[in-house]
Amino acid sequence: MASGSRPTLEDVARLAGVSLGSASRALSVPDLVKPGTLERVNRAVEQLGYVRNGPARALASRRTRTIAAIYPSLDNPIFAVSIQSLQQTLWDLGYQLLVASHDYKPERELGLLRSFVERGVDAVVLVGTDHDDAVFELLGQYQLPYVLTWSLDEANRRPCVGFSYYDAAFKMAQGVLAHGHTDIAVCPGQAYRNERVRARIAGTQAALQGAGLTLRPEWIIEQPFTFEGGRQAVRQVLGGLARPTVLICGNDLIAIGAMAECREQGIQVPGDLSITGSDDIELASMVEPQLTTVHVPKVEIGALAAHRIVSLIDGSPALEVSPLSTRVVLRGSLKRIT
Image (cartoon, rainbow, N blue to C red):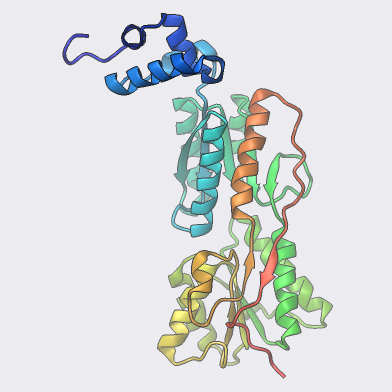
């Protein structure tokens, strides 16, 4: 091989002492190649630094063996954990994962999807069910399989892997009510183009109505899914004429930010204000007091989404995925009122 030139598959076959066809099979369908041959080919690939020609391979097979995933955020631990599970499962199934984020700006999603389509992907994983019609039109135009994750399509028209945010919020509100709270505020996130936030609000309202209570409009506090969003929620609560006894937050980042603001303002948690979260990230059990939250199936969502999307690519019968379960985890940040 000439100095400075890129190694070819022929170079790999020559160094491994196998035919060109055997080298190609070892890289394309390793399970069908003898272990000794596979080992020699892999050793040659590593020694030469050979990288397969992805566009040419995709053109020949009509497959890139690459899945794209678009997330609202990459700095939320629940998405990070789920992406890891998605990536590892896809890797085991012979696929690579490309990930992008629109940073909770849904208008960016179509552009990200177009860029993935231009690069060539076999399928797409999206978060939630609330997307521009243009997103679904583009997926249909290119006949790209897709799976919607985290949330559920109530009409059951689209392939989904997720859980009911309504039920999760209902259960948390019931737990808060069972602890004697009647003055309840929520910081569910921001509802614009986010059906998961709207479901949280609806589930909380339903639980309160069942107890003969009403969720006061001024205590529905929309803030970003960030620590700063939680701080702002507490400032808004403290600035009102009346104060709730509990703040139900849409995720643990908001809740932990709210706890930090309470600490700086001299508000005791849970003595003066109880705070709850959602997601049960690792940090939830490390703060003081430990955070009452909703445990969500983040690892399962990633793994099941990988299997679902690959089955759609292969044209296999659709995997029936039942709604995943959630549970309230009671910890010290929720006070019982007697």
